[in-house]
Amino acid sequence: MEAIDMHAEAWQGILNGFTSDRLAHAYVIVGSPRGNALHFAESFLKLLFCERAEKPCNECVACRQVEAHKHVDNLWIEPQSKSRMVLVEDVDGLIRRISQTSFEGGWKAGVILQADRMNIESENKLLKTLEEPPAKTILLLVTDSPQGLLPTIISRCQKIVLSEGRAGAMDDVWRLPLLEILHSLPPTGGLGAARQASQLKALFDVVKDGIADAVVEDLDQHDEALDESKLKGILEARTNARLKEVQADVFRIMLDWHRDVLMLASGIDAAELVFANERDVLVEQSRRHTQGSALQAIQVVEGMARRLDRNIPDLQIFDEAFRKLVRR
Image 1 (spheres, rainbow, N blue to C red):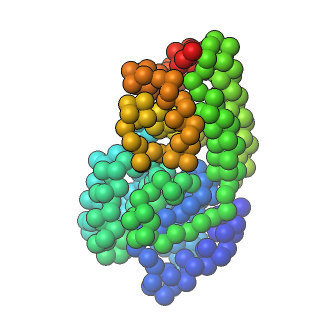
Image 2: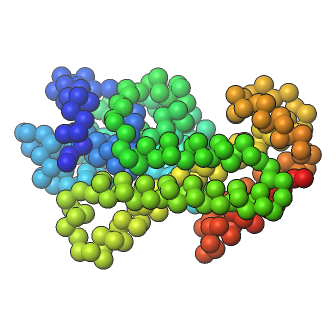
Image 3: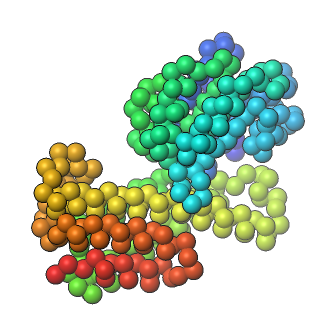
């Protein structure tokens, strides 16, 4: 089913803006970057570039180029594979492209997938363009975590909130179990370390199963027409890509938690704790650390995240890491 069919009210607003020549210059599209929000963004761009009178036709050369992310006046960027961040050089390249003359004399468009993964330098670079956008230009920021964007960026964009796809809804599945693991840190012995390692492994297993189901639901007609072996490869690649995104989020939260502990263990009056509402728990944990051991815990979590890219069983990685976090 087309994204425009599933989100008729949001789509009608885009159509009205397009026909009255009153589109905003930038939109934050909230939904699954690999599912409903991605398909909505593609439909939006087809509307801009379609060559037929009834837009979007989904059949003309321009519509097919948009769907393949190969239209000459449309640039897509997304997080880099190693850092999982949208880098400033990528944003700079997008800005340079949309600031140039359109190749086909019409619209120019830029799309940032998983826009919440821009670092602060990237966001500040984009902010300048949002303040003074080039003419006949559309920017689409696709994200399932709009809270990760600067408020100043949100305020300069029109926000479109789509109903959550199952992939986007997976965040609710892992956040509570992760908080339970964080609350039980640091482990007091080998048994506690093994238990927390198993909890983290179970968390990722549940997330992966949910993502796999969501990926199947997000298949389009082109995907379903592929032979079984190719389709299996596509499903596995998309599932693993989304799982890596969740893993990056989990370890980022774990690092923020340990940095809060480090600040408290260092005797800093941490008025700006990331987890300010968990201050009592963090204070209690910081009493079991020295400044050096709290810093070492951060390095252990960073190492755990890096090792996932290697051919090592997840449970082994987690178990070894949590044993290094033991404080008696």
